[in-house]
Image (cartoon, rainbow, N blue to C red):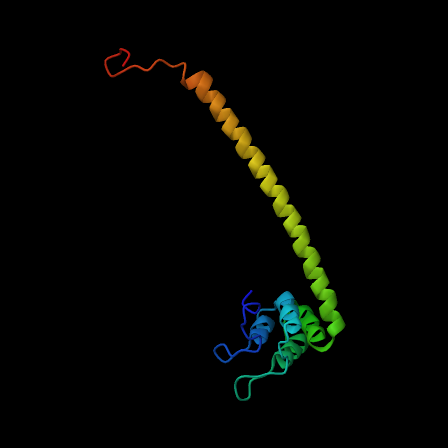
Amino acid sequence: KMIQNGADPNGNYLGVSPLSMAVEGLDVDMVALLIEWKADPLMTHRMQAPSALDLAEKLAKDGSATQQAPAAEMVQLMTDPEVVKARLKSIESMLLEQQAADQKKARVFVFVACVSAAALTIFYKYIVAAIPNEGPHGGDL
């Protein structure tokens, strides 16, 4: 949303680019989105700092077992536009599935709320209203 509102995908945020932050966080989907939005994988903001591509390549080679697979995928995203297109289609499908699931949950919530309101109305009408209202001295008010 920030980039749609004019934020720079190659901006300097405390000496680090958004793409480098996404690589460090192993956020493959964000890397795909930033590449689509023209983030430069070779850009650096500090002297001697590795680029996002350098960082991803290092993690793919030397990272822990949990880092290597996502890092290798990020390297592919930064070097092959077709991989970016495929990943974006995957993200879109995932979001559409999530949206459908959220809509189903919302319908169930509304149904439960309506049934609960109906049950409370019946309870009040037939149970609470039938109880005599007695004051502190035992008589009706």
